[in-house]
Image (cartoon, rainbow, N blue to C red):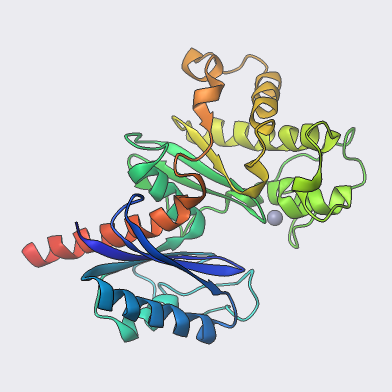
Length: 306
Ligand SMILES: [Zn+2]
């Protein structure tokens, strides 16, 4: 099996592995996210280490954005504005290219998770599906016609504006720096922390009304994505979703707010198989990085054989 390095770059840590698939992930190494020069130096050292252990064919990097993913752009592979201070305009792909003569696959962290789920997880065999992460932020990666949806750069689904629930949530100011009432502002982990004054959303007991409100906002978001993209499945990952009681509440809210509009029994009668947890558990992102590497390797091979 061809061996690849996969890197999942997040706001607090970079996870690095090498291998070929979810059942063959070697030597998981965690690097703290610091200033880009410091972190990327350690990432480069990791890749050199992996090259000593295996014949690495390509590198895949799924990293926080926003990223310039326009292949025709002079700043392709650069972070644009950054949620992480110090990373603004950092040339991620240039840094790796300076050190390695290998194909490099790059995409956002959430797109990485989507492609990981497509290759080996709950999106396998589906031409159109959506992967959402509900955690420190909210993001979505859509596979449309078998390919990741990029369009002008990449979607930022978490910042979709939603109506604030004035009855259940009258005074909350939201946590997004840009929007008072985007989905991330009202339903991310930090929004739950701030609204309910707890250290973590996970400290809220299952019978707390916080989860009813959370299910309400997420259902509203999901309905908008369902009606816009018509995905064949929605996969929901991220820290906030790690509660067995949350998905059933979301199903109920979806039925209520759709109000009979969608007649497709495949969806409405089977919400428990339509909206599902990730098939790869916590590893969607890192497997996605391996899948990005694999894809870039295959593209490079194709070009060589032309
Ligand atoms: Zn926002």
